[in-house]
Image (cartoon, rainbow, N blue to C red):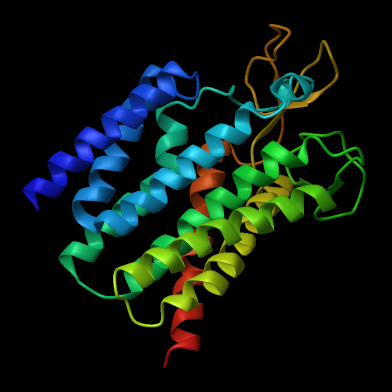
Length: 270
């Protein structure tokens, strides 16, 4: 346990420092990544830790993909490309808690829950980073109405395909790592990760379209997740629950993916 803690801390510091140097993490984001990474490695083990690393590396790489083309929608998002503490905990916090739980109350279902949670946040990240580049405008998930790119709750064929690929990526990685570790029925994590990740990403979009806190800029007339718009004007509440910002939406989406992952494994392996 002590050795895994030290290795997890060292690797998390290395990756966090690399993320800060590459502009993917802020100072608080590094602290959040180290906290999440150390707990995941120490309590979950290498399989869990490597899945977390693969999520971070893939999402960070995609955030830099055609970054200049994404600047036109950046004003809608609550935060910039540099992830902070809140984002690190929103995306990886539940996974870290599941790792701790797996150590206290051992069960193979904890790994299924972890795969579902990480598949959900990875699917949502890929959908956001790729979906905003779609040539076709997205449609609001709840009504089908066309909305500007970057609108919370907007979905497009390209974004949905990216979400499916992001979920399958985590599922495939989990299946390979489970096979290498000698876990029973390792193949199950590919379909489980894919299905739970896509479900979690859709839950994220549903929350964004309905109850996520959204603001309106009176100067620009645009919707945004920010309290102060990119133009510098304080925004006004437009809809949604006061406490439900994008970080909480991401956390809840990971919880949905986690629950679906457990349910699917229990249904497939009886």
